[in-house]
Length: 82
Image (tube, rainbow, N blue to C red; front, side, top):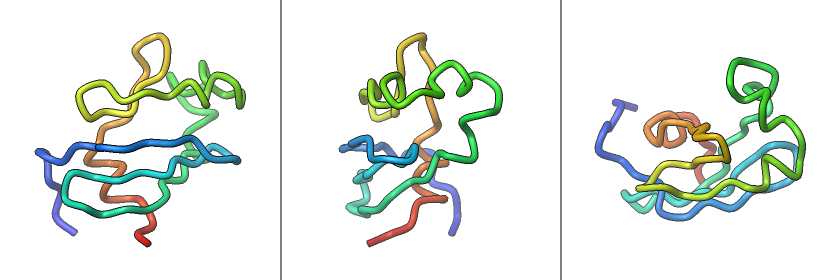
């Protein structure tokens, strides 16, 4: 799949085990597994269920407190699609 840098996440809901249920601006729906990110870099700061569950969309980008975010094109390219 080619990377679409114009893609946005339009819906984002935290799930157990550091996963996100997402819908993207192209209509794709699925689950993005972030468990592999949670011990690396800035994501260590949200590596508890309560902090991870604080995810919000900011201009189509999944974002956590402290301006920690994940690129929507990464979410779209790596999510498992329903």
